[in-house]
Each structure stands twice: as structure tokens, then as C-alpha cells.
Image 1 (cartoon, rainbow, N blue to C red):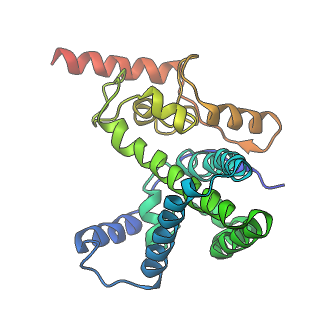
Image 2 (cartoon, rainbow, N blue to C red; image 1 turned 180 degrees about the vertical axis):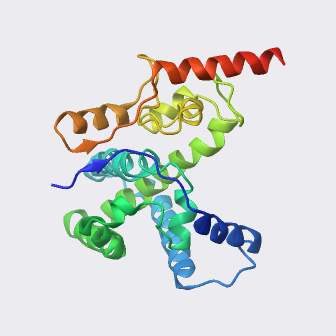
Image 3 (cartoon, helix red, strand yellow; image 1 turned 90 degrees about the horizontal axis):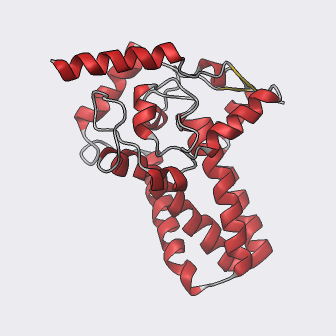
Length: 248
């Protein structure tokens, strides 16, 4: 079985330069390619299906959507996303460059998943239609996907606007409890910005972090290695820096 390596990666200078050129070029003014067109149709289709879902109520479809939401959100957004790649993974994915994840790129399994990603979606859609018809498509491929996207975006919007800031980081990140519940722990965003290499975001016992519990379990059975956590020395160092900043 493949092992998850839970660690952070840093962008190299070449990747940063390419991403900066894309930012300066703008989004709407640049020349679109086939990837842009594909994503436009995917997102349009996703939202149309989500709008149709309430008019096609089915307990079976809802249960399948909920189960898949938990599984895919944890894997795609948390375990294999934010907590394995701290740097600009969104920009890296869009630019087609993966020079900052050599450990993943070196494994045939992940290369296969990346190169055949669209066919996974198509196969899932066909299977769902066979199992439950259009209601399954609407709830699983529509409502579920829209929910996952919005929960993900909450982290970079809500968690930079409302919440608590136990750590005086150089940004606007906050800890937001209800976003943490929706995203299985990603809402402890100020903790993440304070200790970006940490695989654990819920630093306190009462901070719900299901993603960390799964990573810890994977480590226990040997499927996750090199798990990063902040030490007490790291926390004290940040507290001292905060105190010095407040005095200044």
C-alpha cells in the first residue's frame, strides 16, 4: 500500500516566478486554454445539478452524498491537500507545475490518479446514474461538490474575517469553530498559520480536528510517516515573539 507522507513542501524560485506572471496577467484577460473551458463547463454543470437536487428528494441519494462528502473532503481537501502541501497548492495545480511535491510525483499511483482524474469523475457519474438515476447525480455530483467547494473557501474567507486569534501572526487568520466543524478541523486557521508545518490544527483538546485523528491513526498503522507537530519550544518561541511585539 502507498504511504502518505505528511509534511510541508516549499516552492522553488522558478515556480514562484511562473505563478507571479499568471497573477500579473490577470484571470479574465489572459488567453484561455482547454483546461479553462473544461473547468467552466464542470462548474456550471455542478451548480445546475445542485439547483435540481432539492426537487429530486431521495433519502438514498442524500445518504450516499453524505458518506462520499466525508470521505472525499477528508482525503482531497485535508489529508492529501492542505496538510500535505502548505505552499501555494492551488496555484501550482492550475499552472500544471508540481516541482514542489517530488515525493508524490515519484510514486506511480499518484501520477496515475492525476493523469486520469477526469475519467474518475465520468466513471463515478455513470455508476451513480446506474444505481439511482438522476437524483443520485444531482445530490452526489451536484450538491455534494458545491458543499465541499464552499466549505473549502470558508477557510480562506470566513477564517480571515471572523473568529479568535490566539496567535499574533502577521496576517488576518482566525480560529472559527463552526468552520472547523464543517471542514473537519481546517477552521483552526490561526493555529495553522502560526505553525504551518503542523499536521494538527486543533491544538487544544476541545478543538475538533477529525483530520488529525485520521492522520494519527495512519501513523499508528505505519501508513503515514514524517508527521510534523509543533514542539513546546516552538510554542514558547512564538509566545515570546508575541510579547515583544505587544511591548513595542
